[in-house]
Image 1 (cartoon, rainbow, N blue to C red):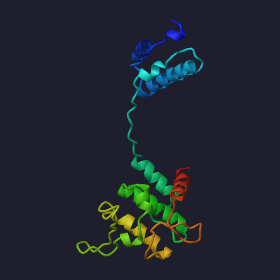
Image 2 (tube, one colour):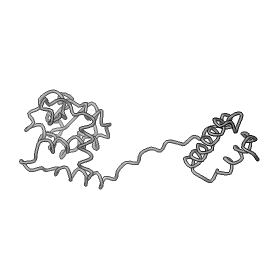
Image 3 (cartoon, helix red, strand yellow):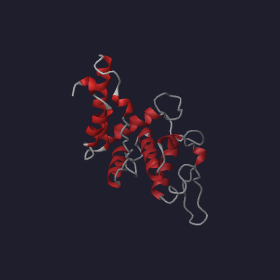
Image 4 (tube, one colour):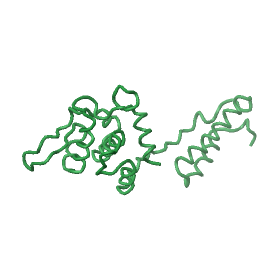
Length: 192
């Protein structure tokens, strides 16, 4: 068959033979044929592009797989211990609390970065005479973890934060909310 005689029928037959491949592989093969036919039309080798009559290949979106608890614990331990020493720098405590909050609460980065000190309730619980952490983005999953509450208090006490963003930038000198890029750099440091 000459290039000028190429129609949608043989292209469909070719693509039908690829059913054993994954959807992503079929999509790549279709794209290669589409690129070729586009080139052939541009160079007047084809009067019309047969790919205009061929359906696209749909690739299902895969859900991200969560990290294992052991991997998360390892990364958190790299930042600092859950029982940090008094000389642990404030930014290390901030990073640990930031990522532990995201993990414990199952919250998105934007939700965690958007927490304010006022969102937390660190009063003694009437029923158990112990402190709990309750935040809009995290309730109630953070409230039962005494170690998390203790770590949160260890972070807030030396920081002196009583209002405003819970997680603040330490570099810019203004103490504004931690940016997404700064949180990503913290994560990258901890992961390596």
